[in-house]
Image 1: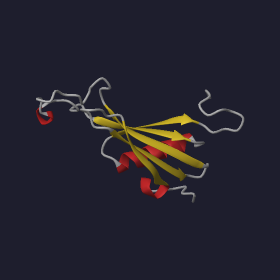
Image 2: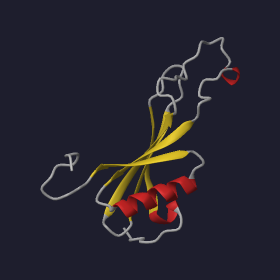
Image 3: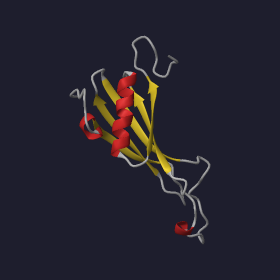
Image 4: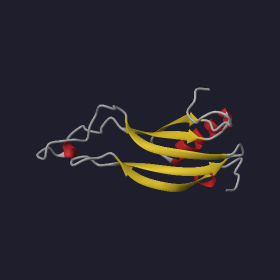
Length: 126
């Protein structure tokens, strides 16, 4: 994996390594989950993105006689939940957020899920 210390675009820094559909049901559309990896200089990073509803209790479930285009379901919008796994500085985390927002029209929330520090388990409090 090559190091990209000063990328100008998300695609320059991260390559997609996975994609799957999550959730859904008999009357709901599953959401996309994408996995990316890259190295900004501090080590390899793994990113996971998921689309989230602005109102988490909002549902895409409707009765069969209800036309989705006439409803307000999903009208509140969506945002991107971007999880970062791996060791990265706060400046790199900010850079990831800026690159992701430039690559997508939706709000992007970037959060560090876990650091991969020797001697600590992934997910331990810092």
